[in-house]
Length: 130
Image (tube, rainbow, N blue to C red; front, side, top):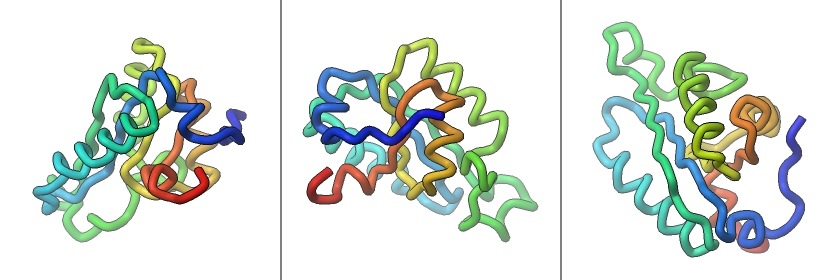
């Protein structure tokens, strides 16, 4: 199981290819701006964004009532989207995947194993001392 990095995020991100990932409600029209803020924070820490991956929630008729919930407790994303992001991360040799959304420790571990890289949440980039 891939462990959360113990060194500072700046040292983990410095020169590293980073994938940005986010689960957004279909009603959220500012998802692009949220990814831009996250990308800027990654760059401040020395990382370089190599890809962006978006999962929309509530686009289908039945999904609207569940928009605030994760698609999977294990991965936050749908199984298909998680596989798609994992394949892209491995192909681009991404070192860190940064999620816009908060993640549990279990989600970080499962996604890290799937993606083949460290997985963190954007809130980690904005937490002093990280």
